[in-house]
Length: 267
Image (tube, rainbow, N blue to C red; front, side):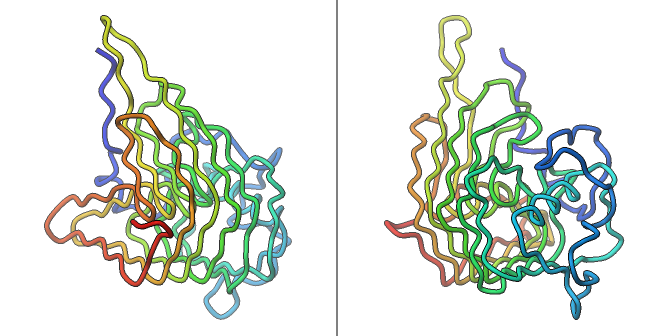
């Protein structure tokens, strides 16, 4: 039989909010990454009173490269804020925090602005948690994601199940509020055949978050969010939802709290 895939080794890793080096983060939004804690040309100092302010699509891409790089290991929470609307122009997007070892664990304030035309067409071993964020372990607020397009096919050789959402593929130990997402998510899985039987990989897909996973004694809190996302995922083992595809906890004190939120067309 095909090697069994685990529901993320997540609930053990979920207690770690800073990254560690797993040597696998080879994909980037740009040709290179400086390896510093944040792009040097972004204004601000990264504190709560003086956040890094992002104005362009390249600022966002550089942020993704930094967070996804092996050298990214902030010693304290970093604060980021949008300075205006940003158009990603339907160019291929590599999510911010693309692995469990390299999540986004900072504070991201959309400041009421819109990020439009995010596009993802590649589902790979390096990028199997897909969304604006790949793996979110921080705080996000007041952000609009408009005309998100995620159109991917399962390559059938992933070591973990894919998680796909407009805001984040995976969310753990995080808070997000005032988020709006519009767009489409299409996921195809042709399956694989062994001994005459066709098998399909499980996948978690949500308009907001694909997989919400909470470690014991921790929580995810999501409030005042809205999605209008068409999801096309006909594979028989896909778990999908208008807001959250699937959520799980590792123990009785892990809490996933979703409130004051809705998906157009229902949950």
